[in-house]
Image 1 (tube, rainbow, N blue to C red):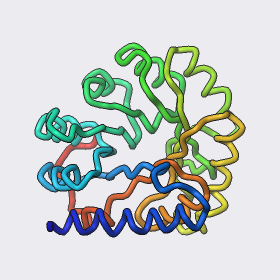
Image 2: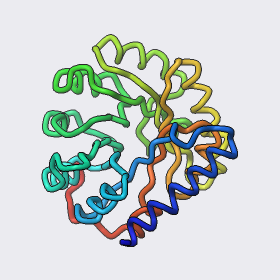
Image 3: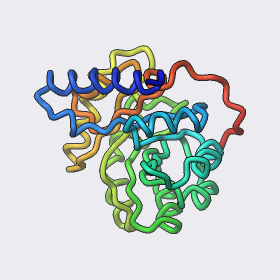
Image 4: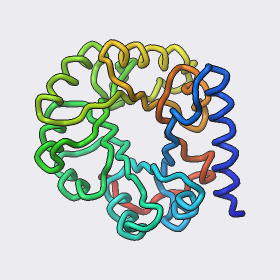
Length: 223
């Protein structure tokens, strides 16, 4: 058993325990392997261990790794997680199954041109942090409507809570926004807080370090 396989088993056990504590079915929570700076061979180990949903924050990393992992068995389902420039969308469209960081109409329009009917999440900047991407909470419902008008399949919301603050209230706020918009998916929770996120209703958790170990500096250029 590789260390990645053992880590996958440990994370799945923790995820399942959190779901059961909340009276939920663990099968209702998708584990997304956050693969920023993770080499393709270690991603392949996670795929073999059953983690078929994998997410990248940087366009160049995804475009480098996706062809290496190809359309094998299992076939990875790529999620795009990070801030995204519109000029990167065309190159990514072939690979991305879920665009998790759509925070403005202009980006949605570009995705709709290159990936008609794409599955997207609206990224919400819950605390209005100026250094973070994300739609203001009060504008979320309007953005969902406008993205749907572009033909996009808006299925949920995504957020990262403010660093250093207890995450539970922020996860609860995103869950309330999702319920108000009648959206089924909530992507929230990472290595340090994914169990709390599951307790608060997450349907996707984005886990990197707990699956792959500490990150190493990437040589890939920023998108």
